[in-house]
Amino acid sequence: MNDFHPGSRYLSAAFGVTWRYLHNLYTRPAQFIPSLLFPLFFLAAFAGGLSVVADSPDFGYYDYTAFQFSFVLIQASALAGVFAGFSIASDFELGMGRRMMLATPNRSAIVLGYAIGAASRLGVTWVLVTGVSLLAGMDVGGGGLDLAGMYSLALLGNIAALLFSAGIALRFRSLQAGPLMQMPIFILLFLAPVYVPQALLTGWIEPVASVNPVTAILNASRSLLAGEPTGVLAAYAIAFGLIAALTVWAITGLRRAEVAG
Amino acid sequence: MPVPADNGIEVEDLVRQFKNGPRAVDGISLEVKPGEIYGFLGPNGAGKSTTVHMLTTLLPPTAGIARVAGFDVATEGPLVRQVIGAALQEAALDPHLTGNEHMRLQTALQGLDREDRRARGTELIDRVGLSDAADRKVGGYSGGMKRRLDLALALVHRPRVLFLDEPTTGLDPQSRSALWEEVTRLSKEDGVTVFLTTQYLEEADQLAERVGIIDAGRIVAEGTPAELKAEIGRPSVEVVPRDPARADESAAILKRFGRPVPAAGEALGVRLSEGIDELVGIVRAFDEAAIELASLVLNEPTLDDVFLARTGHHLEGDEGAGDSGEIPLPDGATAG
Ligand SMILES: Nc1ncnc2c1ncn2[C@@H]1O[C@H](COP(=O)(O)OP(=O)(O)O)[C@@H](O)[C@H]1O
Ligand SMILES: [Mg+2]
Image: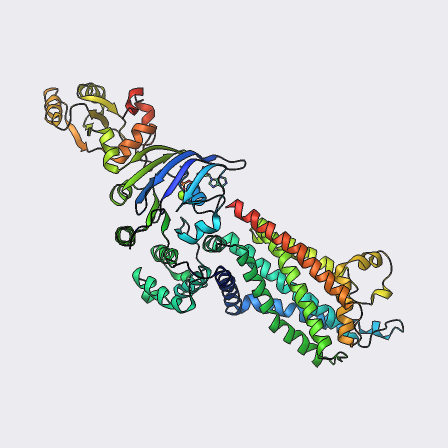
C-alpha cells in the first residue's frame, strides 16, 4: 500500500505538482502568451531605442543587442519564476493548496514541483528571446561552454525568483500579494546596469548597482556571451548564496502556510 | 481485509483557539475504534471542520493531543498523511482539470506506482459513477458530482482512516443514499475507519455506529444513537389548539402528563413522564375540556432531543430556534 521508497514518493508528488502547473499553463494561452510578450517588448524597446549608447567610445562591449539580450534573458527567466509564484498564491487562495498539503507527506515537494515547473517553462522563453535577438542581428561571441554558463546563470535567477515569490505566496496565500512578488524583483533588476555598463553609471545608482547581486550575475552573463568570461565564479557563488537564503525563505513560508490551515 | 489494530482515532482535550477569533474547539476528547463509522454531529459553527482540520494535520492544535492511526497529528504529520484520506467540506477541485486529470494529479501526489495509477483512477471514477463525465472539465460538474469525485480522490491510496466533512450537505436524497452505501461498504468490507461530520440527524442516526454531539466547541454527548436516545427515554407530544386563546389552558392540561419541552411555533410540547400509553389520556383530557386540536404529534426521541436536553436549543436550522427562551428547561432536564 505505502511501501514505495520515500524518495520516489517525494519526487512523484513534486512531478504531480509540476505536471498540473504546466498542463494549466499550456492549455490556457491567455495565461501564457502575455508572459512571453513581456520580455520581447523590453527587447524591442531597449535594443532599438537605446542603441546610440553603443556609439559612446566608453561603451566597451562588442554589441548593443547582445548587451540588452543578456539583461532580457535574466529578466524573462526571473519573471517565469514570479509567474509560478502567482500560481502558488492562486492555488492556496482557491483551495488546491489544501489538496496538495493533505496528500503530500513531505510538503516541501510542493515547492519543488512548482520550481521544476517554473524552470521547465524557460525552454520556450529562451528559444523565443534568443531567436528574436538573433533575428535582430545579435552577434554571439562566446562558444558552447560560455553559452551553457550563461543560460545556467539565467536558470539560477529563475530559481531564486521562484523561491522568493513562493515565500511571499505561501505567507499571504492570496493573489493580492502579486505586486509583493513582482515589485522587489523588478526593482532589483533595474538597479543593475541595465542600459549602460557598470563603469558608465553615475549618481546614486552607481553605489547601489555595485552591491546589487544582480549586477554581478548580469556582468558575468554578458562576459560569457562575449566569450571573455570574467567574474563568473563569483557570480555563481552569489547566485547559489541567494538560492540558499531564499530556500530558507520559501520553506519558512511553507511552515506559515501549514499552521494557517 | 483484516483490520489493523491501530486504525483508530484518539483525541484528548483538544483545543483550537483562533488568533483574534473564537475558541472553535474547546477541549474535546473522543475515541474512534478501528473500522468504526463515527458521526460528529453539530450545528453550523460548532467546530466540526476545525476538528477535522486538526485531525488531518491541516491545522495545528493549540493544546491537547490527537492520534490518528497511532500517529500524533502535531509531531508526526507526514506519517498521519500517509494513512488518511479526506474529503473536506469545500471540495478543492481545479475547474480546468477533468475528472481523469484530477485522478492523475492525486495518484502522483500520493506516490502510487506508475503502472497502478491509471487502473486505480479508472476503478474509483467508475465506483463513484463518474465514468461518463471523466473526461469533462470539473468546472461543469454539479455539486453532487464534485463531491463524488472528491471522495474518489480521497481513496486513491487506500487510506485506513477516512475523514468526510459534511459529505452530503446540499446533495439530493438519491446521491445521499448512494454515498451512505459507499461509506458503509468502506467500513464493513475494507475496514476503513470513518470520521464523518454532519448537521443531519438522520445521517448520524442511520450511518454512524457511534455519535459525538458537538456544540460551541464542546462535546455534549457521546454514544451509539440508541444509547443517546435511551438517555432521553420517553417520547414527547406536541399539540396545537385550534383556538390560540386556549393555549394556556392547553398547557395546563399537558403539564399533568409530563415536563414541558420547547416546541416549534404555536405548538406546545410535553415530554411524557410515563410513556406512550398516556397518549389516550391526553386525547381524552382535551376532549373533556372541549378544546379542539389543530394537530397532535407524537415524537419518538431523536438525537435532536438529546441535543436539546444537553444544550437547551435545537440542532437543526431555524425551526424551533428561540423556543428555549419561552419555556426554560428546569435544571434537572439535562440529567441522563
Ligand atoms: N480560520 C479561522 N479563523 C477564525 N475563526 C475561524 C476560522 N475557521 C473557523 N472559525 C470559527 O470557528 C468556529 C467553528 O467553525 P467550524 O469549525 O468551521 O464549524 P463547523 O464546521 O462545525 O460549521 C466558527 O465560529 C468559525 O467562525
Ligand atoms: Mg464545517
